[in-house]
Image 1 (cartoon, rainbow, N blue to C red):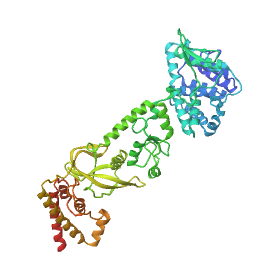
Image 2 (image 1 turned 60 degrees about the vertical axis):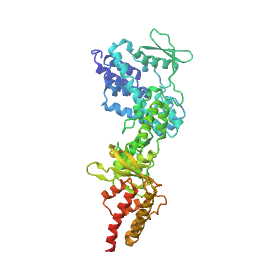
Image 3 (image 1 turned 30 degrees about the vertical axis):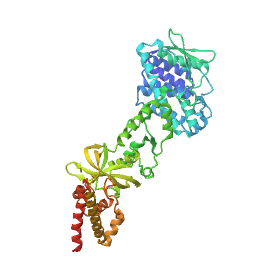
Image 4 (image 1 turned 120 degrees about the vertical axis):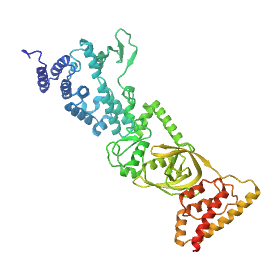
Length: 536
């Protein structure tokens, strides 16, 4: 160094030698001199961090390792040191001891050694001596990476805690500065804020006031956080976003593998495959249990620190729910089989799109969806029947057996698609009432005749067929006293139409009829045809 005083590599080697002899102050001075010449050299930040780490100043060492990674994100030794410090800091043993005291130095893993050298924490060359470009670069390096890392450390520590007071205390401890005496705190603050062209004034009562050059100090800056509070600048809304919908968590749930998602988002993923969307860990047992409990910690943090964002997110959710709750517009359509008013229609649901459709029908509270048969030209038929969900039995693999019963008939006005399943704008159908008394009497006679004919046909069936029908559809409904009291007409007509082995296109034509007389006439023709076969 005497012959080559400008050789920075030699200064680094001498600093290493000083550190080996535990002359940390001299080592720091050499490294500061190198940083003055080359402020963007990642390795020097790493070596300086190692010296401070050996000296017992883990908080400042962590900051320097992060500055090194900010300049070179692939610097493996710095990554390893950061990982060691955070793992040691967040270990359960240290957390238990650390809960007794809210200061940084209370943790046994980061207590400083008995010696002291105040000037170690201070740069040998102030930032004001640097060029404006260098000053700006250092300010950028020394602020953002450290804040982001402390934010992540704070989140990880909160998850490992077991109760709310402990979590909040740990949040405060990780995100606050080390406990220093008044003089040391003033020096540390001055070093940091000089990069922002600010000064620090330490009053006799220990309060720190900030002021820009040439201005009178007006604001009080306290670096010890109130119990349970986290500075707003450390709260990043992106840390509370679902990785599936890229929006703020709504009803967040956490999987056994430790990943959090919106409840609805996770359910949609599990409709397709029983694995975690991020790490592909098997969630078969989690799916079979179906206990999607809201993660209370995430919920509480969002409510406390992101109330405006949560309010906006809830507004969007309510709008989406209202859209799905409409029973005449964008009604979900299950394209499968014929369904009839008052007739049970059990369904085995296994396709992901229909799993989603059934779940939405339950969550919105309507518990209804439309059923139509397929159509080669228009995807599904022009007429169908609403189904009311009575019960759902979920199977361990995510499939379900849905017990439904037919409700109102409808006609399709407009077709659509939503998230893979069909939707439609519909209008409901009702039978046209007969006003003339003679027509009512004729309708009554036709009704009684066809009903008797239907009972005769059913009784003449083989026992095996009859028992199967009774097991699946139940017994045949009785005659109605008032034929026009129900908008869809007598229930036995629909029961009979469901059990008769008739082509679906013929059944669809009967379903679409709005005249009870025409419907009874059609059924009479069918019964006459099948009665001939029975007589043979």
